[in-house]
Image 1 (spheres, one colour):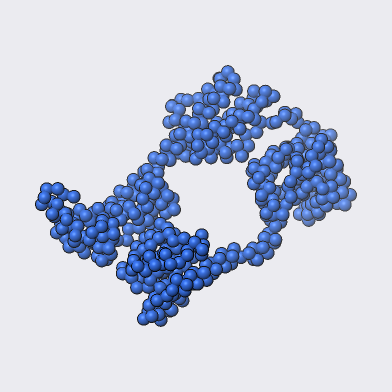
Image 2 (cartoon, rainbow, N blue to C red; image 1 turned 120 degrees about the vertical axis):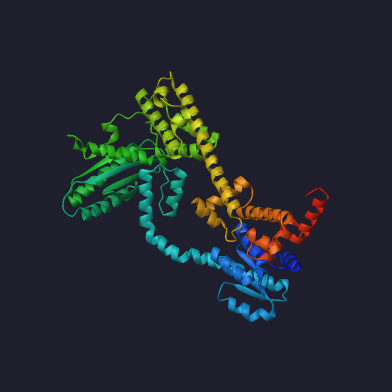
Length: 535
């Protein structure tokens, strides 16, 4: 639903626009009503409208200046100008500048509805055009090989969830649906035009691999990677992979007469574990220099494989780091439960110790990255690793790691909250010192604090419960009230002292926020003082 801001200095016009048009039927929602251009500009900072319907003649800032200022901040906002007949030519000229539509007064609800319907359709068409559906489609098909290669590289080097990988695979036209997966890495031993020969070997390998329905073959870092996708399941998946590999090797030898070696990793159960299979395949490939090894080397033949090798992989690291830095206690405890669930009685003491060292190192790095020193959290001379390994069993070790993680998480959260408060406190001090500057803005405050405006607006509203502009107005109004009570300064002088370049706009804002004009407020304050009860 598109957001609409209505701007007119006449209350009956604003109310008429609200009630006479079926905004919901147009898929539009009114998010603000403003009495003049200046107020509308400030309101737009908060409500971020998609469409602004504004009168052309208003005090403090007319509709055309408002349109130009809005466009400078958001080039995509649509502006509709409401204009009288005597301003018609002026408004029509504005179409070429910064206005999308104009409507001549007096107009009916039907005329406005028709205009908004047209504008709504135009916005929808622009969205489609910006997306460039046809152009993107053509570019997408041209880029498919690159997208597929990028996904395969991600699959080999990073541990992503199976859901994520399947989603990306579908987007780039790959079917990775299977019961189990294997990775084999083929390298050629040759001199001369290596690039051309590798390309020829890839074509042969891909053709044979496809004939076996074995999965996908692709080039990666000057090697040919054969991703085995076991779609039928069962106990003979490894045998089917072996047959396909043997045919690949025979075909390359027959057609190219080039020596080649394949390293093959253990078959894994999920796509998320393919990176482990790739690591094993590279490890197997390293054994090609050992005398007596075959041209196809299986990691299971050359290294003792424990069931469920302990791996503190990238996905676990990322999950633990995220939970420490920005997660809840429940999320952290769940992540730790998954980490410790990997450990079984089959794993040796040294494997478990190495695994826990990697866990604690991740905790240490998360604290350090957040500006927290472990010495400050646990005291000088602490021995995190040694203390852990002196514990009698795995249950005690798990409890210790959880205690460490919860302390670090709490410290990081406290530190971040302190940073938030410190930034907001600096902003409040700067605003109080410079509220008399009529050019004071979010951008100026953020420049002083050296932070982005998006980040600042979020934490400021969270801490102060007001937007920055609301807070600035509050400060200026309070200062104006004090000057009205304690001085004889004229209204235009007070306006200047509290940051208003236009005295009339100061009077408008004062009455809107305080409820009476500056003159009436001074009179009330004087009467209250004389009665001994200053308001």
